[in-house]
Length: 102
Length: 491
Picture 1: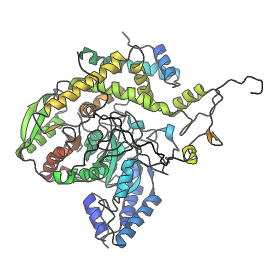
Picture 2: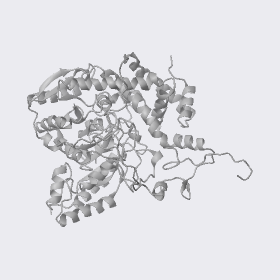
Picture 3: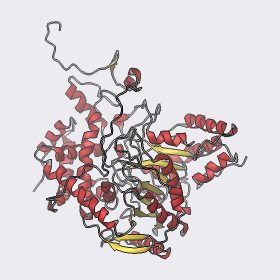
């Protein structure tokens, strides 16, 4: 029995904002099926009372004094932008145009 | 001035020569740049060679020496940096097309520490895309070839870092290890490499793959060189919240401290039926040598080892799917040519920019984090991770260091495993558990196959037990000659 279907991979790819071709979806479904079959072995282990471990070292979130410190300049922050306008990153329009001259 | 012979030269010898004015840092840099120009076309170790920058920094080191000041422990030593360390003003890609052209406005903590100690970065080393891979074939730009056999892989993901040290295209290098990406290529290329305790070396300025597992660390031909580089890069960094504040150990001293009274654990799960007989013979031979040197061998068990690879791929893909969300075509890197909406901009940019392995891991990671699946996969993996870490905690009551193989096989052929991602994941079978537990682990050469391919011994210590690892590693190396073998230069 297959653990994962192409439509499910398509849904996940949409959630991950990752455009995949039909050929990629097909291949990945096949590969993920084998990987998930292997990964499912962890389900055999009883972990009832075990606490989850998110990090290898225990650490408290360190705080520093709330004092201004130097940071990247606007120019440095924008120097790698594929598209910029003035001191902003430029993206396609998000708010639909109302056609009333905004 | 004597002309420096850089092939096979040690870091200590090169730095001492610079300090004693036996040769100039500039001459060292020219010698390595010449080797790179002649040989790297065949090997593919470097993604970027910064000749002008290296010459400029070498001249500064020479000026410091001429002025009678000490340039530092790594005076004029030419090194290489995996292209996952951001370098101010120098393109950094993490082996991915999605970051092509990215010129970081800041510098990673560890590359800054190396420079402050007098080291000269020659350039950026090739790697599997976003450190995802065990063969370096996932580099978006070109594969790296193993200096011992050009038809074989160098291991990954820090394949360029391992191969460049093996081929004397730098005197030492930095890599990162998330599930074995320092130790496995060190093993396949016949050099030494260490993944220190999680948090011992700062991750600031290291492009993130799986944040709870990413460990920067050094490569060298010998364990002393690894110890030297680790002393320079280790230590607390306020820019990394997971950085450990305890003082840095005396790793170089530990290499020469001998191993009297030490107990070395041999975990049965790392020597299962079906392992490559040449690897098993070499590793068992190394363990016998360590016993002859005076260590007590202790048979031990790490009972959850069989779950390590599955747990690792659940945790690392979940973290990767989150970390890689930032590559969206807005602030840096690749951006698709045409997009009519923000969502289309994101998905087209990412579909065009990422290679097959990051895509696979983003999908798997998103799948295991999905509502309805989270507890069965990711939540389960975090609990198994605790059990794996508890195995190590328990075993270090009985012994000081564990000795195991690093990789189940020697270097495999290019293309051999590319069609089967699961087979590739199983290359990490001996290296992922120490990564999940965050304990220090080193790989060093302990023999060769009949085809002249290096075999690696893995030594694993308790948290912050780097010195114990170096004591065993240093004594074993002192009693053997494997580290003195050099591959022939490719023609």
